[in-house]
Length: 471
Image 1 (cartoon, rainbow, N blue to C red):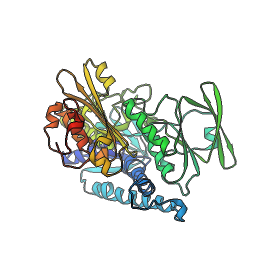
Image 2: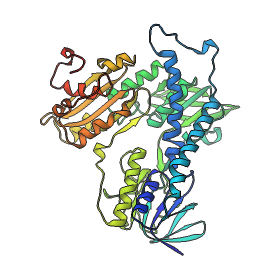
Image 3: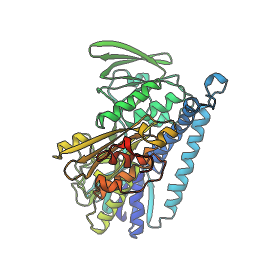
Image 4: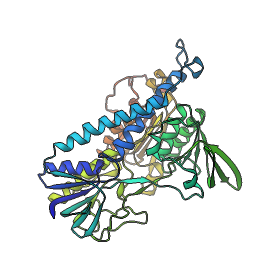
């Protein structure tokens, strides 16, 4: 039996970050990876490949909708056709290179980390089994991630469906696609396929897309999607799916009305569930919630004091890869050194990589009211920002939420091109508890879209229509 200071279950962002930290602390660590190749969801079937496929659609859309007088508008009518298979192959090559450079090569440099490929399960409080081998650990980290949750719809298994994993490996482009779900994954993939020429219909059970986000921004993004030809069906249930040769017929019900939708492919994007099945978490007495997510404290410690958890497998707030990586780092440090480090999730930025992209940090106005703030909110149209006019990309909204008494910034929500590139400035403002006056005192480069943050802050105290460009 091999004994380790820490046994890490998983091979994705959170797990790998914890392995790097364990190596820095010269702790003997075992890294157990199962399912996806080393690197987990983000590099293999998530952030990297999806953005690699979103970009060609963005370029193609720019060719056909740039809005610049004096430049020709390109269209499919000029005889030029995209090669979907070449796009997919280039994406897969990019993924392979990223995995080798950022995970496989890095792992080779971690002298105190041993890799095991296979499914782990707890045998007792301090023992796990992988491929018939028993590993003993003083501390454990559960970072096994999550996977797409498939809705229980009659006929869905028989008719066949795609998750984000299969959609990023298709050898052919579907002519039509039904997207089940109007969350971040569903919206990104809907726009990706639509801009490449697929007829896309989004089916949502809710009244609007992105129900947990600022309504004004979600409504504007929906308008942009519809302008691009993406159909969105709200408050709609799928009662049955029937396979008809190579096609799939969806029977829909919306407010008592029955409809039908025929499509080539179905993308299941209605949520994710944590990978905790068969881990036998009852052995170390690790508690999970009703969805199977590991319940953690702020320090990432579970109900078992020697077991920690990080990433999508936990019941923590929604996160990006970098947040999962930070959780893995802190979990390893807390487990191995006894520290009690935590993350302020209120200052963690996040983005949905549509075009325009939706980025946010902090509270919505409703959340601010629920927490007892007397809040003030200002909404600024992106067409007020000079760089947006220069780019001919003025569709978008910036909303800032502040404490009406102290003027402290509570939340920033931006629907704008490239907003993921500058939302961290807003995150820093919230982390440092800045007021709108302090933010307006900062100097931004002109002309940039990041100026929208300063302009939104200025709007609380100034009539921005009476300001020059570079104030």
